Image (cartoon, rainbow, N blue to C red; front, side):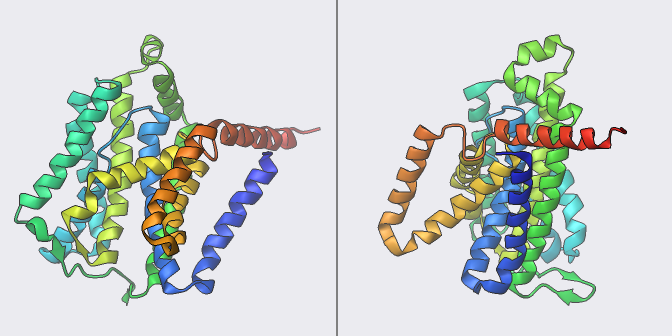
Length: 322
């Protein structure tokens, strides 16, 4: 796929996303909003798994941190939604550092087991603490407002999530091309060689873990006000698996691929809803076939990077004076 084709495809997808609320009913608009949540969560996990090569099986924990921070601050202390966003981001980053500092020295399966345990600890804490509403969760979370205009319709939350998704994708894209992104790539390929080159692998891993945690917490904040109620069941191990599935399905390290994978993970089961109890069997079989015949993902990182490099080279050639 050439750079012009890739750029055109991205613009068409963005245009389709903008026009969707005006041609869709509330049901599919709600599905599309949920897909945007997974796009944001997938990009956050892509930094950890795709860029830095760290297998994280408890990513839903950061999603929960953001949701519960917003829920508690808005219902108990009467905070504005917009003020809860930086607090949730800082708290999630703090959790990432506290949990990651002693554990990110581990590798492979051992790291995966630790992150799985962290996700379960957060969920169990949410079930047992009174401030989180115990097993019943938090209800009556107020809706956000801008300039006195409250968010009341599906379109409002859809466009809010679309803006957040675009900002996150732009930020992750720039981050992936930066020196930090290259350091993550070296660590992913060979940690020992990266350390021999002078890269502080523990610090770089912590940075990836913290940035991914911040992105996940922001999605959780919006999720809390959209649903008006949150409960521990919304942040189970299965949520972490679904987010990881979106990353693997689209292509590890591929920003466009992760966005596509997140949309498919949410949309395909809904499109197969008419098949009733067979839909998850069909969905699972389709995933198995895809992993067999397309293990690199639907939009591999190498293909995306090559297109971007050709586009950048073309722009540079045009800027050279004759």
